Length: 452
Image 1 (cartoon, helix red, strand yellow):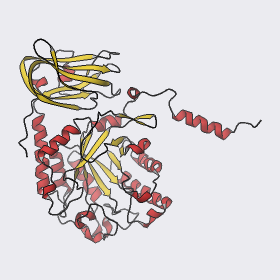
Image 2 (tube, rainbow, N blue to C red; image 1 turned 90 degrees about the vertical axis):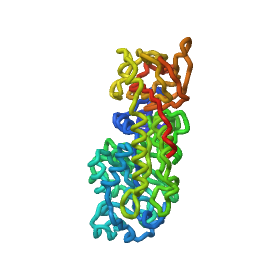
Image 3 (cartoon, rainbow, N blue to C red; image 1 turned 180 degrees about the horizontal axis):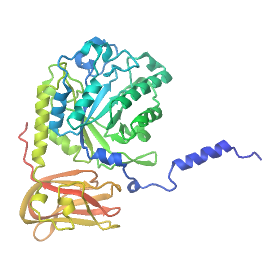
Image 4 (cartoon, one colour; image 1 turned 45 degrees about the vertical axis):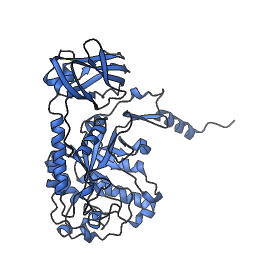
């Protein structure tokens, strides 16, 4: 009889330790502190600005001369003022797109701003944008495209992996804390990346950065792509997802450009600018469905956000502020002590149903009838996503009438319904895996934007 192979025994022990001893349940999975903080940001932007900007392209082929990159009025402060005005909390800069042109003076290639006439080859777009973002109170992150259509090392997997990770190490070490790292493998021409090494490089210098990745890159991401570029979550949004029978907390980020179908700036393109109503609908279908909104912005050849984009961003931010300025549950409802924490406008406090309960009711009573057509509910997620079914009900005088119902609440759920007038309204938690916790329960009477 052959003796046991010690290497096999070690491998088997390692395999067993890598998976839980018992089957996981969706409600057992909890977010990390970094994921909790990131989800509270709710709204970010991603900025595309490179040689494509000057060549009227969306996807460069890597043949553009660095000399075409020469913005005449580059001003990231102007970008950040507009971004902050829209209400965004973080900024992702595309440091290198698929064409391989680098927006910082990397030591790994000459195909970068070093070879451009802009600032006599001494400029650093990444550094300037990072400083401007933090100056205006915005968090900063990067996208470093794995696909590179310029560098000849791309045809040698091992050589390109070394090149890419050296670039990533520069960005991770020299530009401060990174709130998010976009890991998008679009295109790629069949190249297989060493994603494990990419994450190891990032984590060496940026242990708290949220990694955004497609669901297929399950083990490497902290947040997942929604599955479209329309800026909507078309499904019940659960933060925990299943990949090959293994569960992880992977909240959704929904990306969509400010100009329909265009991530980079293009001339004579005003018709593509999304209307205010479109943007407000996008908010309801992303942030209002428990996801992050990632809005794509594109500076023009001057190095400025176009005037019309700036105006639309300001309109968007103002409309959001107006929509959510008058929380009726806070202003008009005398809050009893047991529900006050859900009505106080402070997401750091929360109301809790009894521990172990699977059904609970949070009721708001008004001194006189109040008219409203929208509810905003936030679930406290630190111990997991517990609510599996709920309804919003109003008291008719003789019975409760449901005005909205769904399954998932998650980070934030905005329910929109025909205008009602009532003196009592309740969040009826019909099914929960444990005592539910509600950070905020808010009511609004939202008027149309006027079709802008």
